[in-house]
Length: 297
Image (cartoon, rainbow, N blue to C red):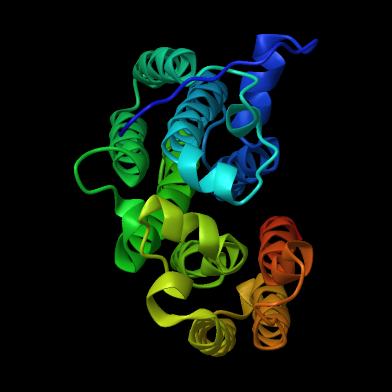
């Protein structure tokens, strides 16, 4: 990974810029996943203790480190795509961001170790390896369609399992099934993010789905994948009625993303090309509370 630092003067504190670079909206959904994993286990008889809180802080630091490294590795693509994130605009230096990322990762592992929960520590180590492998190394996972899917699904599932481990165990089968579906949702519908980034990804040498297959074929693959996942959620709900609510929300979101993807032309403004991705994010924020309601009600 080649790092080029061009730093401009800015009135904002460096800490605020670093936080903005980690993509707060994404950090929020990772926190939601962690706490959903923990609360599902707690509702089933798990124990709330310091491990849950320490684990949540450690997980936040870990995901922040992952996204800082990703921001550095994405500099070429982000600048080509006109990204307004601090690194791409030259408001913070790449070398400094990498140093902060290492510090955050170390602090994260320390906090998870202090919980005394081996399963949580193993989840954190796996997440760190997967997250950093997505962006750095001789063959970053982000440079292939399969690698991106593995990193997306794996990161989501590990986050749910980390929360569950911190609370003292694994949830029942129906909720594990929903966790897996939501992880697959990240891999399938999350690919919509790349629809608006094709030019920058090509410039950076990334072989994303739109780059490999072309825009039109990519939208069809995303739509087909979403509809297949939506159908699977109906089957899961039929098998385990207790997860009917989150399954229906996920199914509805899958249909919306599929329709938007099929209606998204490559020549539209970038904001409109990103509509399927925004629908993907909204669905994530809707399904997780629905999952909690199914546990608590």
